[in-house]
Amino acid sequence: MRQAIRPFAQPPSGAATISFTTADDLAAVREFVGTHAHASGLAAGRIPALKLAMSELVTNTLRHTTGGGVVRVWADGDTVISELTDGGTFRGTTATPAARPTASGGWGLYITGEVSDEFLYYSRPGHTVWRLVFNR
View 1 (cartoon, helix red, strand yellow):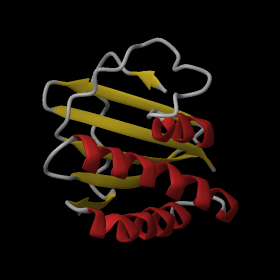
View 2: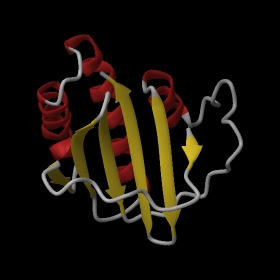
View 3: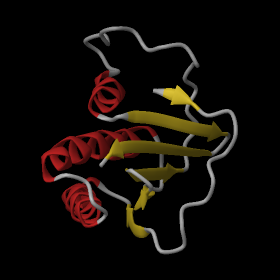
């Protein structure tokens, strides 16, 4: 996981988009991400990893923020990008996370970083964008 020092460029206007507000939306978000990533050229064998990573991010958003979030998926060159925007403020550090999280937490972000080719975030007060990059 790496912190971006500047906001990300806006997703393309045609990026597939879904909103979520409760845990009842989690299965729909996973299916949405898998379907649109596959349509964007992500290999079928990578889809379960992407679904797992996004599931962890959605769960963290629901657990640590209010109001849910928005997920977008699009192709960019040789990659497929999945992005989650929420209304929280992440107070992580730019340091590399611990090699192994503690029993009480931290596994979701750790797992997300392990299964993604690149895992980035940009946060300012009341707004965090999580970006997953998967090579096609």
